[in-house]
Amino acid sequence: MKKSLLLLGVIAALAIGAPAYSQYIFMDVNPGGDAANTSADILTSTSTSVDVYLDTNHDRSGAVKTCATNASQPLDIFSYDIVVTQTGSGSVTFNSWTNAASGFAQLNPLTVAGADAGVGYTAPTGGNLAPGRYKLGTFNVTVTGTPRLSFVGLSSNSSIPSFGTGFGTQCDASDFANTEVLGTDFFDGDGTSSGTPTESTTWGKIKQLYR
Image (cartoon, rainbow, N blue to C red; front, side, top):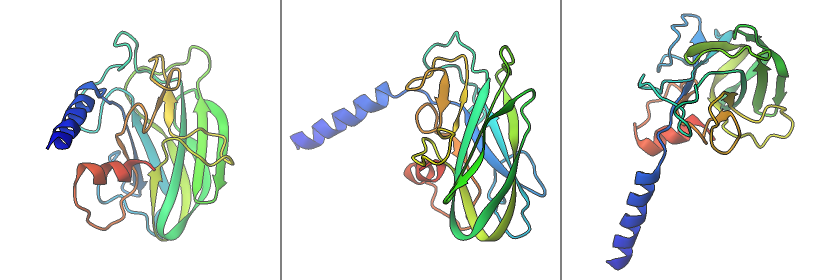
């Protein structure tokens, strides 16, 4: 009984001290791109592109968020890195990446290593984009079978120059200076759908967001 009460106390303390996560990064499969992530975003042999969007100051529900470490600092964006991994039946061939962030230049080239692919871009000095929702770019792909793509928070794949998935910002952030990282500073990230219904649970969603 005492152990149970102690465990409940620890869980309550963690919940109280947990930060309010923000930001939302997601994929949208074309054709029929609606700039949103839904259960219809399934990769098939007809898929030729996967758009990636980032909302720097709203979460998945659309709630407005501010910098968790210093509310006076804007959640703007001056760079981004994306690492994705493929799972499931079939495969994705990454042919190229088309940047859509205004004024951004290549920092880390599109690199494919094993099941992972990564890319990174940065803005010129003073070229920060204001907080908001942006299309970062498009993976131009060839698909066989019905694979699934998901974001990787911090990558352990040393062959890919990009550190993982996140964006540079004036917000101090937490573990990495001025870099909001998926799985560290925010958890709202949706890849493509597997097309198989899954139970909607908190842990189920977390496991689908990043590895």
